[in-house]
Length: 212
Image (cartoon, rainbow, N blue to C red; front, side):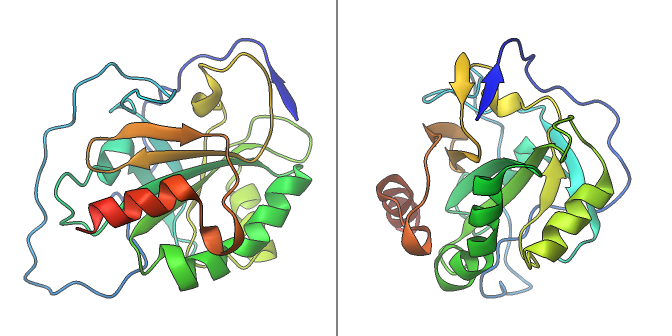
């Protein structure tokens, strides 16, 4: 558990070098001729609590699927018509010291291969602290996390300001999972634990609705 006193909303300037392409969802390859729709980012109110639109200016750098350097923007995950193949977004805020986060991480590759990948769920782990409980942007932390838990298809990037907890008061638990709808970038659910195989009623309903 972590006590949150004052946290500023995440605003990162100056992206590190690396892959800046749109995030890849682990699904069947799309035809080369498929056109991805360019969408205007949805209007606010912006924020991290349920019902708000995720801010458009968020930036996370770290390691992408396979361990290559990557920089993601929140706008990369907007998929207004499904042409990117993203049907749900799960942001998983974790800390290196967190035992519950470690347990969850051990299950993620199986969840992706059997459920989330084929169903177009984009999963991003946001590392907020290292083993010493310090905010981190150390790429070695991300590399070790991926290696220890066999995360070949899970990007591990950094959120040292713990932006997703910026509107939360008091004590919260880690991992801190946030579900976002890629069609309009609205936050649908926060601080929940997906059940066996990654199933959870809100996630399952969102996948079903967006696959139509």
